Amino acid sequence: MKRDIKDLLNPALRNIAVYKVDGGQEAAVKLNQNESPFDLPFWMKEQILEEFRLEPWNRYPDILPFRGMDAYADFLGVSRDSVIMSNGSNEMLYTIFLACLSPGKKILIPEPSFSLYEKIALLLQADIVSVPMLSSLEFDADSLIGRAKQEKVDFIVLSTPNNPTGKSLSGQDIARIVRECDAIVLVDEAYIEFSRECSALALIEECPNLIVLRTMSKALALAGMRIGFAIANPLLMAEIAKPKIPFASSRFAEITLQHVLRYYYLVTDAVSYILGERERIYAELEGITSLDVFQSDTNFLIIRVPDAQKVFHALVSSGILVRNVSGYLLMENCLRFNIGLREENDQLLEKLKSL
Ligand code: PMP
Image 1 (cartoon, rainbow, N blue to C red):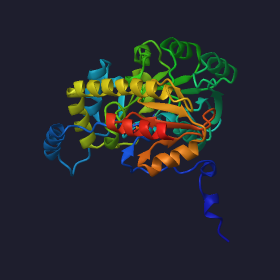
Image 2 (cartoon, helix red, strand yellow):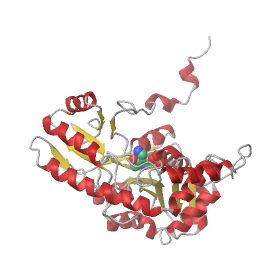
Image 3 (cartoon, rainbow, N blue to C red):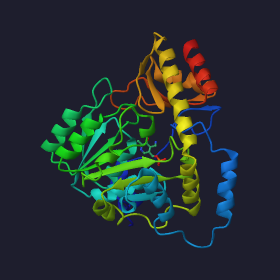
């Protein structure tokens, strides 16, 4: 008698589910994945394709994408051996977690936070210490530090600004956590370009236990290209490189990144537009008495409505796709939507007002 297939697999699979995006990935007004509404201009795509044509497609790219890494290190003004590029920051999260966690290691995760953190930690059979946000959805820095010390955690992961709450830790609080806690601290800055707070990058030289994670999927509008980065002290970076999947980034991603960094003013313009729209939509939503809107440091806003499921479906039936985040701790009846083009935002506002 053979064993059940599930008994042959990693037992941690029983505790995790396949990643999915509720409501699918298609809609007339698509505001559910925190993407940029601005695709690259056609002329830039042409330049990138022209360069890509000359590459040898039959040859492996570099084991690590050094061209992309050097370009980003120079852009940030950090040393080249303190940067690693990945196939989206999700891939880097797996790499960093593999380097930091094993059965019995302790990870501290603020709750609610980006769902992938818990999933990878469960997969690696680490012990999770979760620390709730305040009911205002703000971080509780004192309790994060207190629990980290009390539980002697090995690894702390902070999404700041945080998905799905939109709130940031202050620069001072990040510095306190990194300096005071005897743990590796991963600061996921997926939304940093939209934040009122400054980046943790300035602490890299001083703090050998700090890793900063960046994605090119949000402000840089390259979600389809799959580009992420980790930045840390070179000694720590050399360890993180050990479990990294070899050849994970394509030549195409490297070339695209080089072009986008060369024309960074386009990113800056897009971010200004999104910030302007974020403030406009926030002010309009504040005027609607039947919902609450939360201040955000990201390219998305959170609203609390009387019945999130009902509003979600009403929006879907008008071709507007947002994310129902009601399942997260403290986020009952909350919806999340990213800032789109002005006309898309107007459609959303109109529909919300009519509801
Ligand atoms: N971190 C956070 C906080 C995110 O919200 C996301 C995207 N939803 C990611 C990482 C992953 O981004 P990507 O893999 O596209 O770089």
